[in-house]
Image 1 (cartoon, helix red, strand yellow):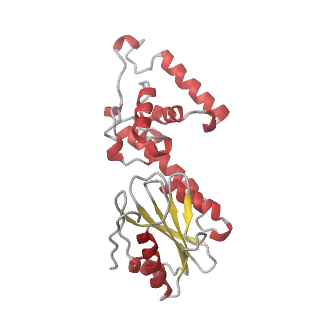
Image 2 (tube, one colour):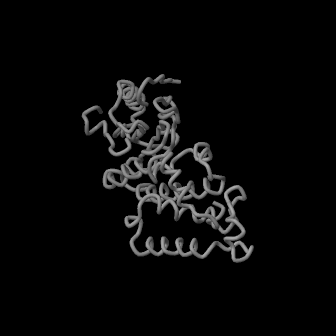
Image 3 (tube, helix red, strand yellow):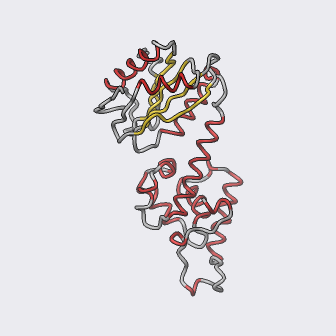
Length: 262
């Protein structure tokens, strides 16, 4: 919803399957004590050390490339993952952005195949589901920080703009979290009538608008402010309250209500 807007009113391996063939790059025959598919001992030792460090110190004890290696181990069992981890970080910037990158963009990176994409997307989905479990079916006003954390996890690192609508019942309990629209890097179409229609279907009494700014700056644009006013007006005609509009940036978020814009 930032930038120039045109608004319209109107892995398999995780579950025990074998990695995809295009993700498995065998070491030269000389590196194998046999052709039984075992990794060289130095590689197995490296993986064991990383896993032990993770178990002992958690993610905080590991830089992004090592944490990414741990994820990639499951996708490609017989290859050194450090070069691929570094290529992914060079392309996307950090661990979170690697996880949230679109599959088509991930596949453009040398060494990435469907098994790697699957593992990354499983981890991303797990993170989002965990964050969502802390807010769904709970009163929003007493779990506001968890709600913002969830929105940040789900949207902060997306490469395109998304609009989510959080629907609340009469006790301000979150009953539905739905993606309303996707757009481009600086534009997303928003349909106030669709938002209100869905609120009525869910018997929601209130809602919270959320969208991200891929640029990283959550400052609202004039179009953001104008569209929020349109949604507030449309919802108000049906007795539905808009509690807030959150803009999610890379490192900080903005609340329309706290800024006096709502």
